Each structure stands twice: as C-alpha cells, then as structure tokens.
Length: 252
Image 1: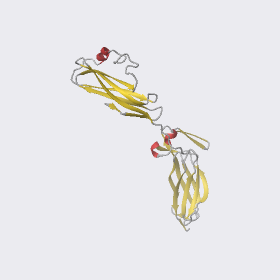
Image 2: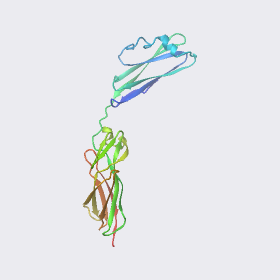
Image 3: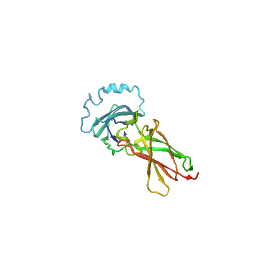
Image 4: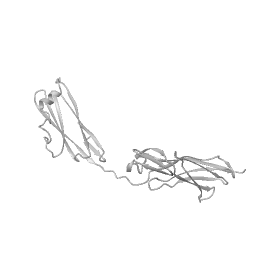
C-alpha cells in the first residue's frame, strides 16, 4: 500500500513523505525501492538489495517467526525530486528461500500558487462614540482599535510615526484562510466623519493617530443627532477599513 498516491508540492520548501506498508505471511525480510519511472532499478545501488547484501538485510531483521510479516518503508519527496510517475518495487524474501516482487506507483506534481496581489486586510474594532445620548454642545469621546491581518511568519517594526509590516509573503493576501489572527496597527492616521440625521453627505471633522497598541481616542462636540464614522485609508500594502456609531443628541 502506497500513501499518498499523489504528492503535491507548492514551493521549493515543501516536502512530503511517501510510505509503503509491506504485509504478508511467511516473509522473513523485505526491502523497498523508490525510483522515478524510466530509471533502472539498480541505479545507485549494488544490486536488488541496495548497498547491503541480501544476507545483511536478512540479518538486520534478526530471528523471525514465519507467521506474519509487517513493516513500513518511507521516502521523503522534495521539490528537487523528479516530477511525474514514480515506481515502487517491493522485494521480499520468503522463509521458503524464494524472492518475490511487488510493484506499485505514485505521482509527484508541482502546483505553483500565484495568489492575487492586494493589501493585507485591516479592521477597526470596538469603535464607540459616547456618551449616548449626549446633550447638545457637549463632547463625545470617539475610541476604537485598528488591527491588521496577522499572517504566518509576520513580524512588525515600529518607529517614529510609521509601522512596517513584514513577512507572511503573498500567502497572506486576499482571504481569511491565509491568515490566522489580528495584530495591533500603531501610528496610523484615522479620519473622523459625521453624517447628520436625514443627510446623505458625510462631513470631514478631524483626524487622530493610533497609539502603538493600535488604539485611538479623540473628542468632538456634538450638536446634531447622526452617525459618527472613522476611516483608515490604508496604502498599497494595507487595506482600508471603517466603523460607525449612531448618537442621539438631546436638548440641554
């Protein structure tokens, strides 16, 4: 039994172990060869038992009760190994002195994944405009947290007013399945907008920056009921995101 029947490698770092289980009755010893199809079986070997003699292979198994035989053989296939069909030959030595052979195969292929290019996802969580309701002319506190999709292998470097996100590679772009968590996104600008109740036009109010831990806080005066929105514009590496909160304004 050969497992898996198809080895799929996605990049030069990938590898996969192919295993062959040999089982039988009245078998004393066995050996397995893995060879790309079209290559001679004895290539790189000193005979059908490999670099060891048949007696050395048999001896390595020690004493064996000729009732039931089971052993597992493996080979790791890497990016540099041949692509295409591989042949597997099992050579078994029976307790009756006979040599028996068995053949199987598996397939190796490369699948180069070229994900769509695009910025890493960001989000604004926990956005809140408070208090709610608020008296006309009083201050509203706007706060929340900016985060960026965390990819496998990411690391982050922060200095002055800039955050550099590294690692993850193309495998982090375009889709939740390529990243596993969220990370703080500090020193980024958040724009504040207001949409008065009954209006269809957003008005820019002010901007604020996120702290090193991704949080942001600013205060604005509230005069009308409406929706407060915060937006992170992003850049070519980091996607945009936004959040909203409706606040009712009451008379003093």
